[in-house]
Structure formats: structure tokens, C-alpha cells
Length: 240
Length: 240
DNA sequence: CGGAAGATTGAGAGTTCTCAATGCCTGTGG
DNA sequence: CCACAGGCATTGAGAACTCTCAATCTTCCG
Image (cartoon, rainbow over all chains, first blue to last red; front, side, top):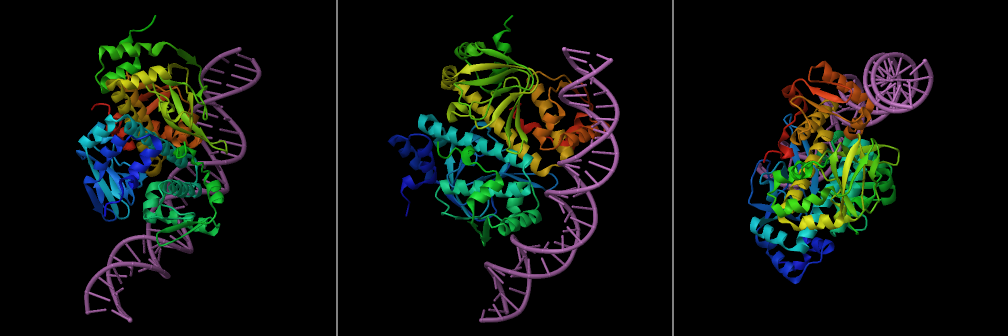
């Protein structure tokens, strides 16, 4: 039951950013050669490791994170299906942060050889570069959120961002999406405490912007939520 | 009085990251064709602009920043001599943030044609990729600072980072460096108020880690400062 | 010498954190 | 099918950190 190659989340994404040739698509069919499953909350790769492959998210979420000596944890990115986890090891050789699954996840392990072959193709290289620039834009936006928005706006902005990104890969309906992360995970991404995240979520609920039960978020009023967050999706460069 | 081409801050940097051929260096000699000077606190390029060139810092500092509707400002990066300001416009076409000079600065305007020619050279492309990955690592570290370090650690970490980066381009002595930014600039980069930055700087002084007068910082006890900041320079990938 | 911008200090307010208790859901074993 | 344990979510109260507002001081520069 191998899904059609064009349904592959990476290929769908690359198609949007660069024009792939038939040859490119053929090369990319090697992507599924080594797919591994992770249960929730497992390390996919740790700081300091020197892998000879890179990781590509196929299903589920993972997060990029760094641990602090005092036991603190800061998540610096959520990685969704179609996202590469660590293209930079191709260059640096060594991980300077860790990556772990959030909920259950399927990850493609891509050999260094295939990676280098991909970079050789102008269409693929261009799309990968695009994706890496988007990652950078997202990091900048996170910094703006941390520096200049209060906890309420910050939580709302993260919800908006995840919603937009999930929609772009077909993983959100008109008004709902699955959120495999706990409130602790959210707090580690937002630089808040789990207690405070909980209070903010309550307020978002009370103000009629969204609800959630189990691991499903329902957006009740997108406009209001986006306005509260100061969210403008253009930084994600989804529609260019 | 054109300085020798090998003293060019970008070329020095690229030499460290990739091996440049003689042809590469020749191509890069076109870098100084259009150099412009900015006085302090000028916009070099604004959000929404679609320039047909990219900017490279030659002297002085600039900063990447975003403005918020409420008048807030968040600096997301300090750009030092040898740093590119906006390679991403080559891909995105449009600026999704602004860049302004901090103190007086000299900036090279590089045509799209030269930029594309540079990217064609494997050695240069590799070095540019390296630099962009370092930029990303710095952004991640900033997020960790915002999310999980208090104001004291955060200020100390920024000082450590700037000190290390300035040393790597020969702009810091054994224990001092010039800081063209005001405390307001620092506060916009740190997500704090100028008042609070001032208090933290006072404490850093009182604890014997550093002093400053005019626009010069003196590091009195690097070890102590780095320990207070939780600073580990490896993320800057300066020595690989 | 005067004016403007930046730096410094004080006092009180607001946001977020810490600590601690309670409630809820889920999976497991009897 | 029920009881129970463990993890997560929720709530409360007080503490800590950072902000706001406002005044004063210093430096720079015409």
C-alpha cells in the first residue's frame, strides 16, 4: 500500500516552490526507502550527533529544541509533514540542537548520497533553498512574538501559524486541526509556563475565538483570532 | 585608497568557510563597485521593497527589524561587517522586514547579476550557504534566550555574542569593542524596555563583569560573563 | 550657553511565575 | 465491568520580575 509518489508531502511542497522535472521526481522516489516510526515523545536525533543522513517528516509532528543546564527546555520550531528536520548537518556535520517527536510520527531517513544528489538538481535545490528561507522567516517572526507580544497574543499567534501551515499541507479542515502537543509542549515553545498557557487558552475559549477537546482545535472566529494575534500570514510565503 | 581586495570583510569570511579559487576572488572584486555610506539610524531598505540588488555590510553595524502596529519595534539580528543583509530577496523578491543602520555604516550594493554569478560558483555558494545556516543558528539561540533566560542572562548573552562575532572579524581587541547602538537599540533587540536594560547593565558593572563608557564596552571578566549568560560559542560555528 | 538626546534612578502597577491542590481522562489489571 | 494509577489539565494565592510613568542627570553639539 505505497501511496502514489505525487502524494508525498515533500514532493507536493517542492512542486509549489520550484518546477520539478520528470527526472527530479524519479530521483525523489528514493525518499521512501528508509521510513521509520516513532511513538510520541521520542528523540529522533540529539544534540552532538553526527548522522550520515537527514530526516524528513512524513506524518505527525516533531520539534526542534534545546535543553538548558537548569533543566529548562526551549522549542525553536515545530516540524510538520513535508518539512526537513536537519538539512544543515549536510554542512555542519554535527547537530547543535535536538529533534524529538511530539505525537506519533513517521520519518524518512535520507542518505547523504541522495541528499547531495538532490542538491545537484537546480529545481530541487531551489525549492530547498526556498524552504530554508521560509524557516528563517518563521524564526524571525517567533522572535518578534517573544520580544513584543504578551502571552495572549503569543499563544494566539502560534495557533494561527500552525493552522496556516497545516492547511497548506492539507492537514486542517475549514476550521479544525489536530494538535498532538500537550500544553507543556506549547509552553516550551512559547517561553511560558504550562500553568500560564492553560490560563491563556481558557481566555481564548472565553472570548469565543477557539475551543479544544482531546487533541483537536476548533477555530471559531479566525478573523478575531488573527486580529488578536497580529497575525499576517505573508511571512510564511505560502502563496507566492 | 582602495584597500587590498583580500582585506574585504566578505572575502575574508568566505575564505574561512569555503576554498575560493583565483577566479572566485576575481569575480568578488566586483563587490566594491557600488558602495554607499549611511549615517546613524537610517533605513537601508524597508519592508515591502523589491530591490534589484542585495546589501552587504562593509563598515559599521545595521539591524534587521520589524515594526508593530502599536509602534513597537523588534530587532531580529545585528549585521556586522562581512554580513549579507538580504540574500533572501534574490528568492522572495520582496522584503518582509526592514534593515537600518545602527551607527554610521558603509554598505556595498550588489547587483542581482553579480549575486547570481556568485551563486553559480560552487565555492562561493557553499560559503554563502554556510553563512545562512549560521544566521539560522543565531536566530534559534535568540529564541532560547527570549524563552528561557531572564533579563540579566539575556543581556549578558547578547554582549557575549557580539563580542565573539566582532572578534571573528577583527573588530574587537583582547577585551574591548565598540558598540554603536544606544540602550534603546539593545532593548529593541532584547525584548526589554530601555529602563530595564539600563538597570541590568548597571548590575553587570556592579558585579565586575564589564564596564562601558561612550560607545566602548570593556569586558572585565569573560569567564564570569559567559557563565552568567550560559554562553557557549559553538552555535556561531566560527572555528569549524 | 542652550537644547536635544540618551542615560540613570525611583516608585508603583501589571504580567507572569511558583507552589500547591484538585479534577479529569485513559489505559491497565483484576 | 470496575477500580486504580499516572499523566495531563485546571484553578487559586502569593511572590518575583519587568514595565510604566516621571523626574533628574549627563553628554554632545551647534
